[in-house]
Length: 279
Image (cartoon, rainbow, N blue to C red):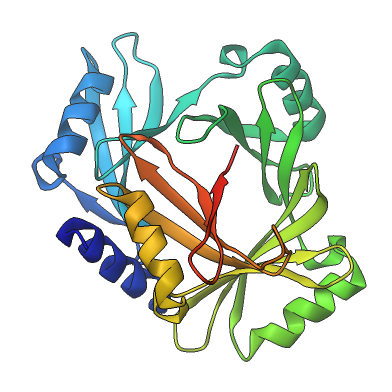
């Protein structure tokens, strides 16, 4: 087993057990050398503002405020390995079909920001706005204007989904609910902060059944973990979910990772069988 992969797994174990640390402001010199290189390339002739460091999905992320040469303000996000995760863009900077969906979502609300996500297989856009009733809303859309997900409240989800979430609260605090739309149908990504401060993330189907949940690597069978480590190699494990939907006759472990600066997502069976890369 490679030492680097082992360290990554230990860090992931810690991230799953404990809640993400709050954001803190850092200087450029306090970021990693790889992140500094990316930040400086993005800033160019502009001026760096505040840099906020957060922990998300097993890695440190730097959110950087930038004033461009033309005096416009925007921000971008960089992972500690130097991967550029997202860049803020204007409404005119996204494809026409995405602009149409953005206008439909925001309506007569107030658009706050659009982030172009680069750390995914396909580029998509996070839209944040304030609705007419004062609620802060966010959604993710693809370049062709397809609505991929939208944050919803407990009043906007089916009773069966609400019951599942309530049964898993155990005195914790609800963080967010995102309604997802994909080829397999609609489901809901839920985040809960438990009473002891740990984060619990899981996905619920429309009928209220549990589809998957984020899992601590310590709970993964050794054979499956060996395959995961072999596949990720010198890359980085960001998250592992236990799926309760069968794939090739088994309930797989779905790994979200990054390798050579690109998404590296795959599935592994409980006995260590590699089930393929995610498209």
